[in-house]
Image (cartoon, rainbow, N blue to C red; front, side):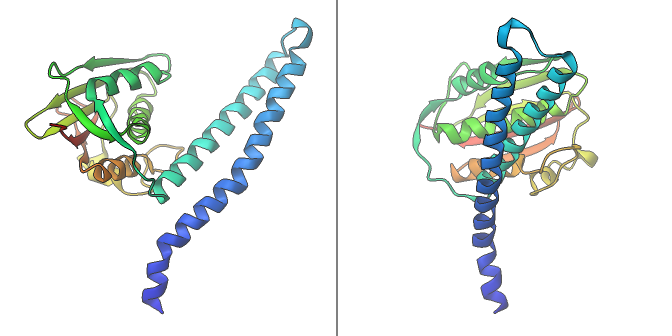
Length: 228
């Protein structure tokens, strides 16, 4: 009986995550629609809402967004999506994440492309999500601002993307601990981001590792098999 229970836990976790997602996402969608309606009514006639009201509407909007992001992480962690592989250029992956990521004030990005422009075979949506998770971690490590450095490189068999932030680095230099599910040093968040990044990298035949950078800060390296 114990072995059966242990075997069923992953399935139960997936089922629970799906149910929680459904039961929470529906109310969140209603809240979001109601929020849009309230904003529209308050802005009718061209007059903006009271600054205090606008502030609290912004808080609600931000909390709804955060809750949806947590749900998305839970689903990505518990589900094994079917990969839709296609050729992709690593340099384009850098441009994609830099162009789409909303950088907070005080944070900038330095990108170093690989002159060889290596190509890989990936599920573009899955890897785009993984890169966004790495980028989010890097930005959140620098609440006072700083620079995220993204570098693309390759060797005979592997293409690599390295993200280096200007934050405090991993406690005791233990980057491996950051991949443990639900481990986080941030005041908010479920601690699944890097676990998902490694999961997606490994499902593509690659790897993900994290360490403290020699010059300070933390860095995450995603390696993928080179498309010959």
